[in-house]
Length: 443
Image (tube, rainbow, N blue to C red; front, side):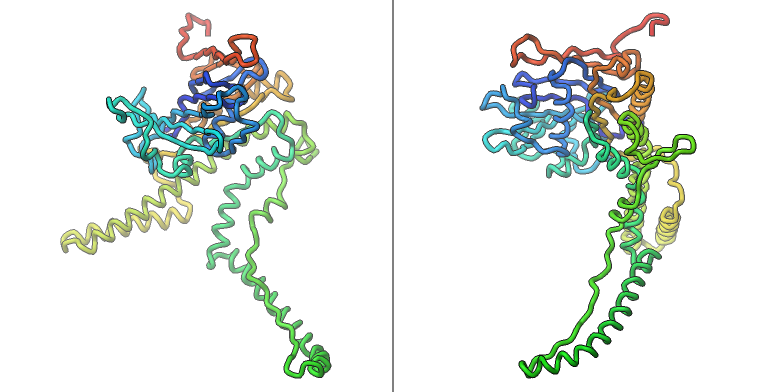
């Protein structure tokens, strides 16, 4: 059930981007998609294309525009995404029911000479024949940033990311919930943290006041000579500290680091090898997901309680005398639940799983810097990650250790050119484990 309540990428089509030309390449998604093939066949282009559509990367004509693209044809990414009920701002008119999913089809185009990003949405009932067309007026989700926030959230790991970037991302994953909590407490004037910051400001004012008084005593002698030249002018020191608003996030990040313990020895993450850093990064993904998802669920639950209280109080104003007792009890119950929730109480079990965007791990060559035994272990971890209803994984790889054709919900796509010419079209060959029937103990 949770899987149906997460936005998921169902299909991606790419045209005139990177080494993929005007003929386009279409990739159908699964829990795990392995992109294989020779170098420069378009594997990493598929990963970048999703980032370009989502907006986590900006289109760079010199880098992203296919050199063999016809001048009059746009660079284009077309996404078919399952947008579940409960995710706001996406009207049902844009959704098509298919295989138990609610598919919204949108395309992003970059057209010369300006190559500005333009999004359009497929209207399933549009067109003169009512069979569907690209909508000229309106689009799913309205503003692009709003719709983008409904798409699966990409997390890209490049094959050549340096150690500093890896540690920075790891720290962001680990510290995210803490920083959010600290910022919330800092902005609450009644919290202990806010009071402590205010006391620092007050102490600074006391010290500044003493210095100001001392300086002005001395300055009276300077003033005597100064007034001899400008009789109507005087000089004095006025000290006033600007409000102390510390950047809590920067303070915590600058003082934090990840340590790796090997027996009794403890080292910085940067002292570890590339393989160890990448493996640690993957291991933290699911933990981060659980932390951030818990926060989203709690926020959603709080909003529902607040809305329930507000709606019931409005009814209470116009209610008949006989109804007031029931409505008052309902308000009091909701307020008690809200107070308990703010105090950290667990959220009651509900058959209605909240709808949220899923996560999409885009990873280039995960086998880099890994021993074959470690590569097999990493493969198992990535496949286990994709079993979560929150996650999908798209990886490019040259290693057989990361390809498991026997795992359910696995798609393997081989990208290769249809000929030897430089501009030969990319022709994908696809294997889907769910379409294969194994006999006996073959699997």
